[in-house]
Structure formats: structure tokens, C-alpha cells
Image 1: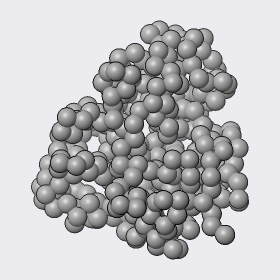
Image 2: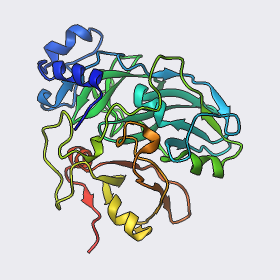
Image 3: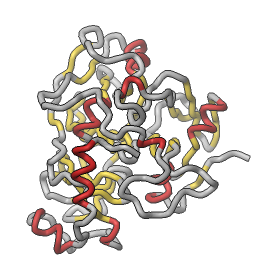
Image 4: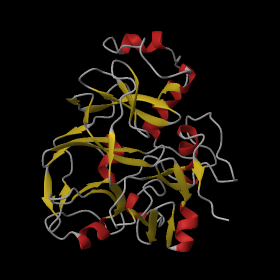
Length: 321
């Protein structure tokens, strides 16, 4: 596996760091480490960059689909369609470098999140524990998944699950919203009057992939947990709906699957963000939609199999007969 040199330098140093509340408390003096659901602090490690070393975005600017230049048809975006509001697209070329976008859609405060090491892209309602939160990137990982933090209490939150795991708000859960990764072409053709996030005002190589060939690697980076069952490769994509996971290969072969009260569909045309050095040139991993029996979009995630197994060890693998 080849990793962008700056990222690799950060992470090589990080793996030498101790993982304990005493170690983290110096960097996080306002976090209540006595209140936590983490059973083994060995699971929590530094990903390299310090707190806010990966800068989350706040109140981004948007342009219309017609006015957006620079995106190629196959490159991925996270789509958010809230009833009564103009659909929005958040390009992965930006989220790769920022991982969290704090936005407001209508009257709903949302956090659009993407963890490259898990390929996990989830949108959350930022309202929890009777308050509205804003989120930053802690620089810490658990089971190779980003740990977010809220700026109000500096509690730590697991991105893959939306659960607060350290600090005052431990045990609180963020509500996942229906959102999905799809190609820019797919979003734009369906939503010609939609909005797309503008390029942030940071000096980043937007459009480049710092994790070249990562989703073809044998093992996940900075992960020491169990591998998935059923001979499913650790970095194979699965479609998670609640605590159930469908291998993407099975869905792609079928095109459509209707099981367990949900309908999953797959079409070609989306580039992997974790394959080639240029995101737009990544191999085709397809577009996924998940709906209920009434045709309503459902919250779901297309993440790596190891991450599903790590956070849902008793989860159900929908592997067919």
C-alpha cells in the first residue's frame, strides 16, 4: 500500500505514541476522560495529525450545478436530499482533506462526514443531548475510524456509529440522515437545479487521492482487530443498513436486491476515491441507493468490511444462500 508521503510521515510517528487517558489529557484538558464507554484504550491511537490538524469546514459556500466547473462525471460526491430543500452535493475531493463539513440545510444543522480509512460517508443531524453541536477532527482513530469531537463539550464521537464514546456526552447518539455517495454525473443529471459545495479556501491538492491503492490493500491501515468472516476481504466494500451488511460484489452482480424490508440498487459510474492518484480516474465501484418498501431513501453507509465487523461484531452478513 502506498500512502501520500505527508500522511505516512504523520502516521509513522503516531504509531509510537502511547494510548491512554493520561496521555490524551494533556492535549485535551477540557475532555472528561473519566466518563467513557471505551473498554480498552489500546483501541484508541493517534492517526498522525493533531487536534484540528485536519480542518473541518463550517458553513461552506455553494453554487448551482450549472455554475460548477472542475468536477469530472465519475468522481464521487455525498448527496443530501432533505424534503423541501434544494438537494446538495459535497464532493469527496474536498471531504478527503477535511473529513467533516458543518452545514445548515433549511433549519436542520448537519454534519457531513467522510473517513477515508473506512470509506465511511455518513450525514448526521448535529442536534443531540438538547443542544446543537459542531464537530471537528480529533486526530484520533479507533478501529481505523475517525474519532470526531464536538466543540461545545469536547466529547469524542465515533464517526462510523455516531455515538459519543468519551466525555460529558458519552452514550449520546447522533441521528443518521439519508445520504449517499454517487457520481457527480448522477447527482447533476437528477438535480439540474441542485447545489454543490464550492472549493474551500485552503491550500490543498483537491482532486488528488492521498491514499493511493488503499482499497486494494490486504490489510487496513492502523488496525489490529479481527478480520471479517466468510472470507470477505478486509477492504471489500459492504452496504450497511443498521446492523446488516450486504457485500457490494453481491449487489453489483444482482443489480437489485430486496431483502429484510429494504431494496438496494446498484448502477455503474462512480469512481473509487481510494484507488488511483487522481480521484476521477479511480476504478468503477458503482452507485448505491437504499430504499424502504415505500420508496423512501434510508440511512446507510458503504464502508469497508473490516469496519463493519469491528463496530458491529454481532451484525448480520447478508451473503445470500
